[in-house]
Length: 473
Image (cartoon, rainbow, N blue to C red; front, top):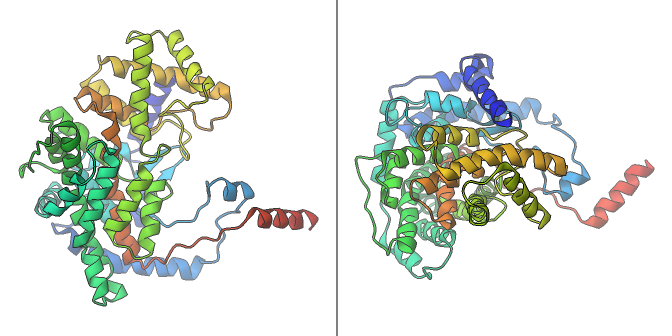
């Protein structure tokens, strides 16, 4: 029943593709503009002055409008629920899930160009959408793919920096080290040292951002091949797109795996600005740190068990279920194992979300992919069982606001099926994806002249005294 409700919800989302013409006129206007210009930089040069004026108008006319009340719970609880960031590229709705420039995931799957008919959207198309608000043509996406391939050149010293670490170092440690080494080539740092005007900050940021997005698959695949494949490196294939090339350099030639990587990179790219990795990239960037420094900081946040590392933990937990109970586990056995996990003071990884209050649409599109390509896989069947078993248990427990599965509950099983079985590496895939969202927003941070982020902090003494005074008043 739970699964049927989830499918029904997804169907309703798909049926609304044509119903959002009345959604914010300004956003829809941006999305539906067409242009034959194949150069992304030129498109941004046209858009940025308009959006700069838009922001000035919002601030001048509505700068004193209150967006809500801050409570002590919010201050103590990690600023959860506070509205305090401007993040143009995506917005997370508690019920509908993520929208990229106003488009839901099903809408992106329908509207963005694909590598083949009825295939998964190309990540380059999403990058174009995030930066411009426009759905690109296939020709524009192909041009951007070529530009990213042209930029995909990594100096030898980057690989030497990674090689200085033990092979046993966590893949995220090696990946972040490689990104930091790339920083030597920062165009923004050079331009800033020469005294570039603030109005032009976005241009070298753009150069760094696109070069970073182009290069991280090479760094990430190098880490994978170094750790798991005896250091045998696979070069770029100039005939492949971004997602297909990443899959190829990892060592996977299956067309289905290429499609999975396109889907994976697209749906993991951005999740509004409040999550740890996005917020970290924005915070560090607000100090005018270049995109390499900002993204390396974001990766260190992504590596935390409560954020990106969760996709590693999900597959390991699922495999522990199989190890103890076998593949043909009954629903009652699965319930017992879930309760055993919870009673042991642990969480069931892949369920719950800090913002979402329904099943994550990113989970649902991965489920659709599995139903299409691996319907009989035993681990996929187990994931389907968990979808029926876990939410009622978490609801009964009464401590979880969202008992539904999130994106991490499904991705590992798909990757495992196509041969990428090394769970410790999964967060690196997440990091490659997240470069698209974080770098897109960083370009707009510079274009809009967003200031240094500096929220106010208080002590427990301050809170206690404030609350006493408020009560007395």
